[in-house]
Amino acid sequence: MAITVTNQVSTRDRLLRAREAASKLAMLSTSEKNALLLAIAHAIERRAESILEANREDIETAGLEGAMRDRLLLTPTRIKEMAQGVRDVAALPDPIGETLAEWTRPNGLRIRKVRVPLGVVGIIYESRPNVTVDTAVLALKTGNAIVLRGGKEATCSNRELVNILCAVPGIPEGAIELLDSSTRDSVHELIKARGLVDVIIPRGGAGLIAFVTENASVPVIETGAGNCHIFVDESADFEMADRIVINAKTQRPSVCNAAEKLLVHEKIAAEYVPRIVKKLIDAGVEVRGDDRSRRLANNAHIAPASEQDWGEEYLRLCMAVRIVVNVQDAIAHINRYSTRHSDSIVTRSEANAHLFLRGVDSAAVYWNASTRFTDGAEFGFGAEMGISTQKLHCRGPFALAELTSSKYEIVGTGQVR
Image (cartoon, rainbow, N blue to C red):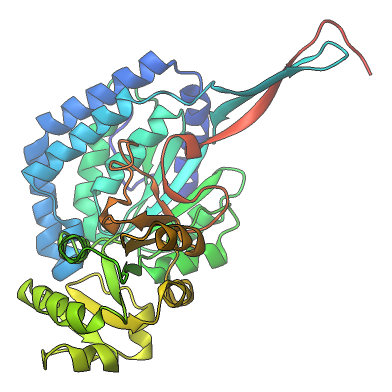
């Protein structure tokens, strides 16, 4: 039985326990891991009230507003979704042990390349207690130990969730470690723990991600901010464009896959800009725009967009509008200002769609769909470790397969060289 989480154990001792647990987790069968995950889902539902109570304490203490409060907040519905996400992961195929390639050499050696766990995964994140569960269960499913360093604003929620997970019978001691969030010392120790930790995943604002990538000696999978774009092309169906723009901006503006910028083809701008600006304002969105879009918006209250606006991730009900010459101009704008996260084109033109899909250098590129689908659960992963905006070793929403490495198993009959 895993121990209850306290802050009396040093960071190094926690990392040593995680390293020891990783070797035990790697030997668990698929059925054993799935049984643990189903027990976790049940425990989360059974302890829902204690989770909500801990979260209420965090909400009261943190005093956050807007997007940050929404990220921290847990509700009965979100807890049910959390538990269902665990069950979804349990139902997915186990990548561990999968044969990636197999061949026999002329000398008779049989070589097989197979998936294996990474080992110890460290994750540093802000505000979102659901990340505690999502990442822990993905790590368990792939036979990895996980070291969690959440934000101080979610201290009570994270501690309660980890206590619940660690209390599930069969979870090895050290499999899920929660570091002290009261100081930055634990972050420094974690990102410098080369040899004890195999990979670090930072999830949070641009400042956190930059700090980790610039200072870590442990390999990093960078998850980036989301300055996402919708481009409404000249042949777009306006009704479809309206639905996509409003959904991508307003459905949950505090998350990284919400759209922040709207680009409109100049040939339809006179008709479409006033239409969509009104709908955005009616939906409570603060609209900013370039000079042309402001002139076309029928004197609607649109603030001028500055150069800084085009690269900013708002994470709130705010959107900047720009008129572009054509699809090539839209691609150029996105590749200059985006964070390489998620961008979408709305068009009837297959040629323009394919040009956009190939030309935009982002992790997820859409044709006639909202950027809000860039999500592990929506992609069928059950949950996600994060959304990578780098190109090595994974890109976009990543989950089970990306939490593995590979090794070669070679079978001989006495061959020597």
